[in-house]
Amino acid sequence: MKRRPWINKYGTVAVLLMLLLVMNPELRAFLLLANFIGLDLMIFFIAIQLRYLLPAVPSFQHPMRIFLCVASYSILRLATRMVALLLAPADRATAGLTTLLFVLSKNMWCPTLKADFRPN
Image (cartoon, rainbow, N blue to C red; front, top):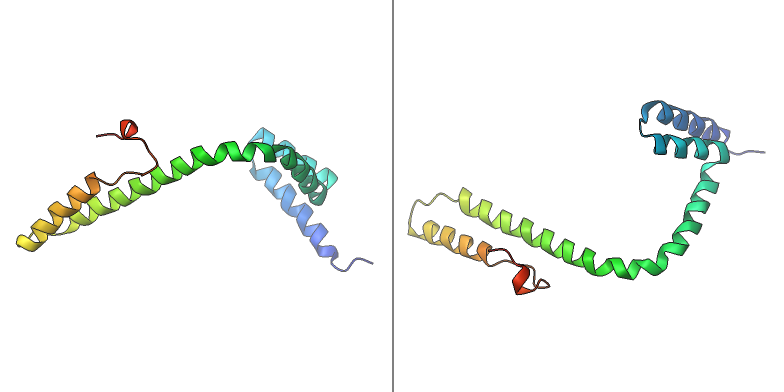
């Protein structure tokens, strides 16, 4: 006795609707296969495939760490410059603060990068 037969019905309808909307041929083939053999078996096959990729994960850590560090410092540098631009230099204090923020943003670089890779 099935406790929730509507899950199978609506799941099939959802996959068929996605087949109508998806234009990528590889994704359409994946959806057809998932509709044919079932989504739970498809997740099982993907998990088995990922098990063979686990030894390669440590080699991705260093480049990903550098990318995230550079991206975060770039966003921080951009935010600091935007705050400095949005400050209205009405008096000496805000003019000095604007100059200080621009100098700080010029010197914000990811500490994991070597000095020869930093742009000027």
